[in-house]
Image 1 (cartoon, helix red, strand yellow):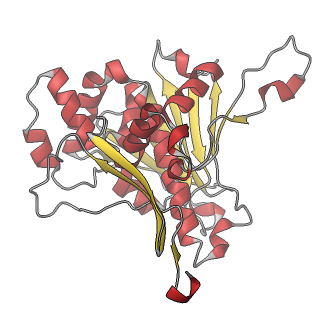
Image 2 (cartoon, helix red, strand yellow):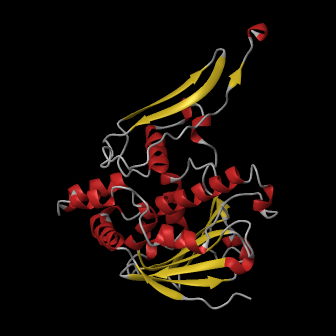
Image 3 (cartoon, one colour):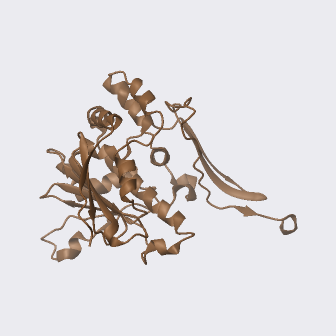
Length: 317
């Protein structure tokens, strides 16, 4: 059995400041919260797939990775769940109690108080998990790291103000579920049709299938089957598709997914090269330099997406 170990902790100062800014500056773009949470869930699945290359036991006999979106209209809740890598209790504190990104102080110092300008800066910083509080007055996270026992689950709960609580729980399945208690007036996000449209708009390119609960219809005579979840995205890596099948909007939304930049890219290049070395590449150039570009402590890197690589010997040509 899991020992009772509930504790209440305070948010770091910068988290409280950013929560306030996001809720007030991004409210006109509130639907982006779903893109951010689904993107995080997809990343968790990708991390599990990568780590399972050297430890297949992490799959725990469930190798089909997915994201499930369910809702309860009466309770006014929305849940985004994945069966990805999950988090330990320490991970939860580090990822949800602080903002693990260098340059936070510099970012806050650049805010002008102008809502429109600040919202653009917040877009460069990335909104991530905390965007849930744009539409929710309480958020509950239940998670368990892949490979750990069911008794090592953790529940995180907060109303997005000064503090959050942590509690050890028993969680049978690996991964993370995020339940949003929707604010008054945000009931539109507990609707199957609305959710499907948002997934197709923002997350159609994600290579992990996203299942959305269907609204039940008492008149169709199908009973429980009427509300069976359906995969609503293509679940195909975008760079593997033909360029003629990809719209500019698809390219822009994929950029926002991989970069967590709220703004659109300046331009992009999608090329297939054939020769001694064959590969497909997709390169983006941001519209603005990162606010912490000159911060020596900031992490830097390139996300590389390769469709296929074939190297031919001269004798094979």
